[in-house]
Figure 1 (cartoon, rainbow, N blue to C red):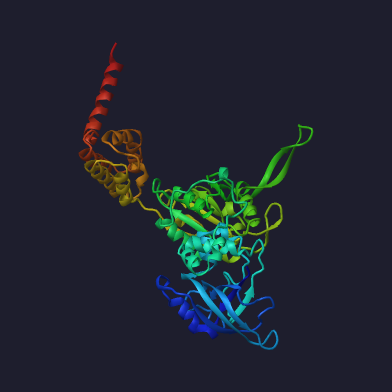
Figure 2 (cartoon, helix red, strand yellow):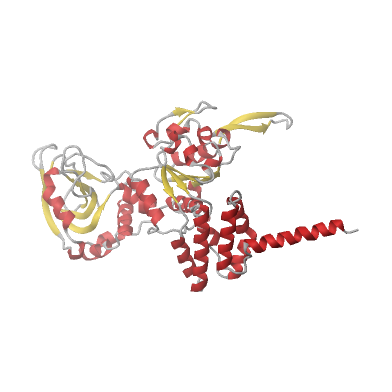
Length: 486
């Protein structure tokens, strides 16, 4: 069973439009003719065809249709005339039609584990200005039709029904299982699905816009770090070996992040030598370089707790998308290296802890940013999922609103995430909320007292500010009386 790839160009615009506009629900096999030069020997009638919708211009520019794989067919007739460079007349029967074209980035986004087995498949993922072309598929580790068609069937399951009716022989190519994928012990299920709005945004940035650096901004408890971890894991298809995690802090440096000197005992066990070793970033970058067909990620938590410009050093230039793949020398070892294009950086920061405006502008402009504000809609949904009584859920959301109104929208919903009862709220108040609110409003006694009283109206078991002051005064008086006693 031999496959060829046919790319339809500017001489086949009518055929392209027909393929692009035919409704797959009412699809019936049909045939069309096209002319192509340079048809290599070995291509013959009965060969199966993967049809690629190409460009209608000589520069590979954008077209009215999406360029990519749109159909599967079979050569019915092939009439050669003259030599290799002379035109050949070909008739193709379309036996399966996809509802939309698929290009390299669609496969990377939704079926990357299969893509590495057809990453060198002719034409796939390539924007080309060449006119009609036909290329034979030389089946090998990177040109596996079974992997390609299995990936297509994952994205569009309806192709199985079309194959079953029009070409049952092809059904055997829809069960390709990637070999050598991560072992179960190294995989971890992600907690977000394809419809999650954060993932949808992130996937579009990575696979469509080719962004590689991201900064998630939000106050504590807004879910930014949780999402950074989950998005990274989903990007790596659950393979934890393709994800690194590091947290910046005030003493974190280039020596900890990129490369630095590490002490080692010499053979005698008494003398110490120092060796330059790769650290967090270089280790994950080296993994990514050795596996160019897959995406890797490094999550940097609390980016602004350190000094990013000092920690990144010369990487500040080479993490930029336009400079990925450019070779440069490392500061300590002097070794040449590069930042691979398949390494995604996800950083988190709290803009209220340290203003993002304090970050180096050169660093900020290299990141695509996503804000994570306090979200009471998400909190309401959580209460519904946890079967919290409606009245209690309403009181909890009201308290959440009161706190954010007073604190300037910096109080994250995760603080209330597991609350169900009035007792839960009282315990949270005594163990955390009272302290957090007091610290945030320590220079505004009036605002602190007002918020305290408003919370007490919603949850009467919480003392008002007046009651608290009276209780504290009573304790002071009792202590003073005890000190005066003989």
